[in-house]
Length: 75
Image (cartoon, rainbow, N blue to C red; front, side, top):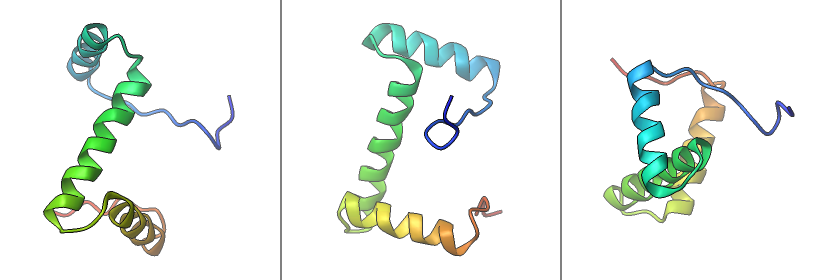
């Protein structure tokens, strides 16, 4: 598998089971469903900030690069 195109993440078992159930209902693969959720969240956050989804995506990617790709989790 090309590590430049694909990444894996660990989720709790309960979340994985729920993901499988959601995928079954919508006839999607888990990766497709996760992409859908991410796309919807970008649109929601962009709207909250009065930005286009594209502009918001560019902003958060630049912010991530500025932080060296580190998790910018706030406490």
